[in-house]
Image (tube, rainbow, N blue to C red; front, side, top):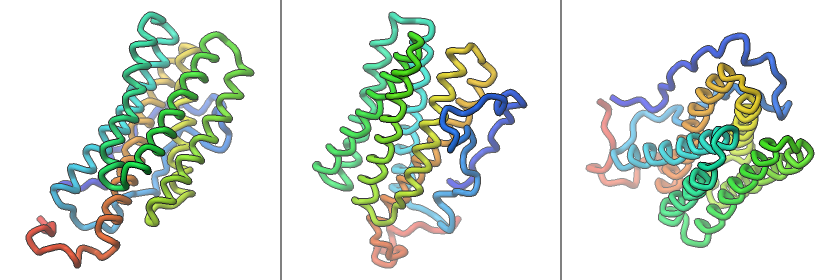
Length: 236
């Protein structure tokens, strides 16, 4: 039986990974190993598993295309607008699910904040690419502020989500992306690969936390008692 809690062991990044200070001292490049979104969940339905897979795909896309954008700023300027267009399409992909579960107004608020997240990210990377550290620092502060705005919106629409948990998950992701950018621009490729590995796992934690919250919302925290028997998952 598929166990969504079974995250693979994060590869050992070696001694190089922690030899550089994080761009935000409050958060290092590590994921939170004690946080398991599907803890105490015995089984899930096929439709719930589809939701889990879609959320994992979308959050992984964000990580994949932010990395591509950083790399192209560092080496292939001609590809930057094309990659940015692809990256900026990700909030639209989220819209379908947010609209389905929370309605059009909430979906529009979410994609607006996520779009701002990507715009601020692009501004940070652009400043780093030309060596404008002051501009990068200013935009970085705005980026973390945007994270707080996203966390606040999500807890307002779903009581099963925690503001502190969302803030922690998204802050960790943002800090890792910044550390990844520093590694790329300084040509520290071993460190960059190690951070990217951890970023992928962090995106899965975020996706699964989102999926679990949606499931709880749909079930009304009833522990499946209100569902017809043929829609309940079975232990395998």
